[in-house]
Length: 170
Image (cartoon, rainbow, N blue to C red; front, side, top):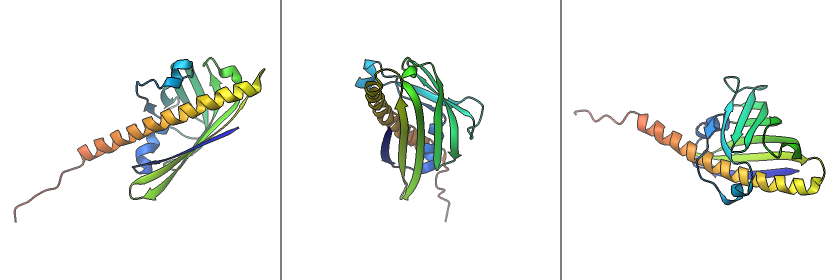
């Protein structure tokens, strides 16, 4: 199955990009996460700097998900595949890959596209596929909201550190 999400963020790609490999989500708990869907908490790269072949780890309130980075083009594209998980529903997942594409739109805006391909496995595969689709839709929306917040915080911090205009004597 394939799930595609798209958003326009009011910032440049370099303000969003770092949060795909190192981020801390907020403490809110949207309704669907109250029903046992793993809520993303943070992500990080386990072996230092992000690059192809390295492991990105997503920590949820229900365990961890390790993902092998397949494509790494800073400020443009990131793709990874799930390789291991301690989350309770791990046995449902036969295949899970994510790809992010960032497209600058001009005027300080960036289109972010996220495509997740996945397949369920085991008994009741069709029901599990539906469960995964619902969980992934929730995760897409929640992560995008947090990336928007983190990108805004990054912009605010950069503007606070920028030198102010100098008004010299004439």
